[in-house]
Image (cartoon, rainbow, N blue to C red; front, side, top):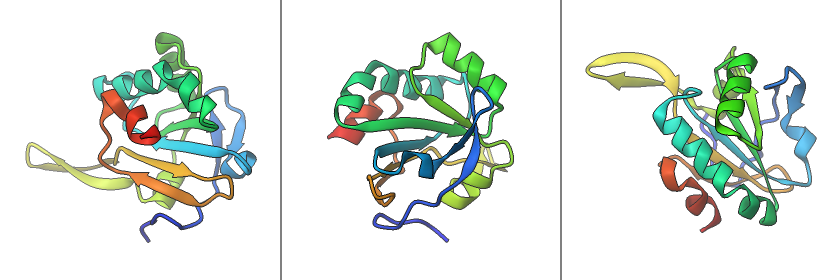
Length: 149
């Protein structure tokens, strides 16, 4: 099942970078930017995270909570946060259950080789838990502009 704008965002339970349980429903009543990215400390993912970091104040002023999610471990997320001074939460989805719920664990192809990986996708979720916007053509260096437009 693929999600569309207007759908209720699937609730999930996973852990954050510190190993604490985290659920989407914890943020009911708040606007959430849930962004799926392939891997900590890779060039595109670092550019995207740093763009969100550099514009974090503007995102907060607009009322958003930022949650990044990848299939990396909590420990990997901790290192990424420390190295890049990220002010927001990263969610570890090692079993890819959240990716599956959001349709972001997909078959990819590089140099003719097929493999499974994360589709870089951002879900903008409103205060009622509905998907307001799905950004699937993410511009890593200007992602905040795509969100706040």
